[in-house]
Length: 626
Image (tube, rainbow, N blue to C red; front, side, top):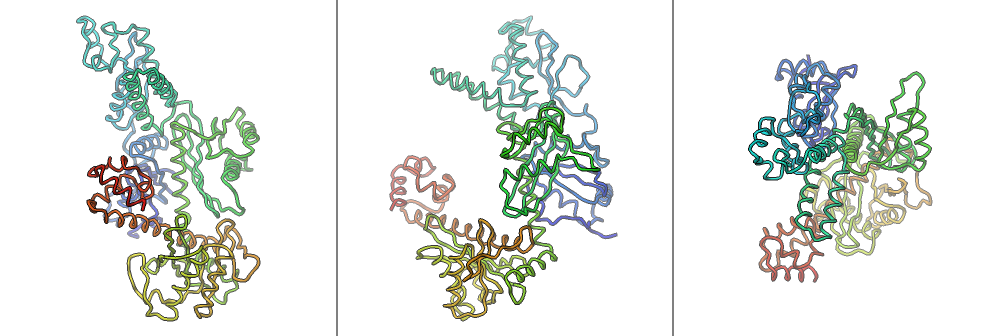
């Protein structure tokens, strides 16, 4: 038996976010559901040598054929989603969450004259409204404690309530405002029932209408100069928002929706679909679409909706829910809504989630789509056959004599014409060669074409004179031999003006036999020097995908260097000010978040940073202005 799993994903492909993972057998059956604060760290434990695993774990992983994961926003959400999916799929290797009675619920005894909010593990009581289950006892206690600040419903036992009635003295919760104290007549039965009804409505609806009502009352109180009331209402709004934030993967029992997240670039789009039925996430689907034609996000939404719900001969059509939540509304939303309603047999609401728990789930779907797109591009780049096909395709489309095994790409970055820098990234055999990357500072330039000419001239002199002075690499290395390698193809980010400037630099350098092209971002056109029209690579091909990846990597590397130079430039300016040391400079940059924000800050704002007085703040403003 092999000592490793054949389907093991690469470590770098697994996200470090919190999430839920599922182990699947060859038939797609869920064998195990687990949650993790850090998916990469948790899943790595399963992929050690098989003989080092516990016997039960070894049986589970050797029975599996695949592992999938879903990213969520917090460990709390991971706990909730793990519970839901264990109840949904009944995985054979899970032993937790099997019995609902072993997990706590938040309950309200709506059948009593004075309703009571309490925590219980018993779901058999009559006249009680239940919310949950919660996966951790601390979570339900924290939720109840927070809500009692806003809805001071009774939470004491019957014995405590009767003693308070007979003694005429309220308990501590009544004194600190976490109980309306109906036991001593501070509110009557109907008023207390109204408080309990609001409590139940908020927990059952999980939306923001209660928050909006309180926020409106807060503004009204502030305008009428009732500041203590406004402050109290402000605290209530914060409490409800905290509860809503914890419940983004649990909806009301009436929620039936499909939530779509779409992440795309010029050549591909990743789609993540969260399937919510009966208020619970029943499943997650994800897939990647190669864009044969240029499509904006609105067109992609229409394309995805049609392909998900269109009836297919011989296949079971996917159920159309009451709500379909998408990133943007397509142009023909009215017709698309009618079509979905016809398929369902009743009205379907096609819309964008604006706020609340559904908007939070839409953001989670988008996060998963972005990760899926990144994973798709990484795996496609790592495929040897795809890389070989890409290099052969580039050779064919550009009429090169041989496949370009070493490609160098250059990009220029600046901020409003200042701080001009450039990058050079290197791909060999279709893979990045990061220790060969180089970056350039450009002191004086007129425009992008002049910058391209300067950078290419500086790079090409190493092909003529390998002992020329080296420029700084990504790691600060100055290895001359790597920089003197001859490229098979040069790429510049831009259109015909940029590629002509690059060709002029090659001619002036005296280096012969080099090929250069420009890649224009808008339509992914490939420009050749001296040609009136660009070369159009077929879309969704490996060769265009590789060119795009190389260009994007050059852009990323240039932007990173440009930001670094901006930060170091302002730091060096600040250090020269008398009274400012390295620690205070770091405190300033950390407080304002960016050099740009610090440059526009007033003296009063700067003096609010610990260790910076008014006089020193004025000196900082003066230095940054001059």
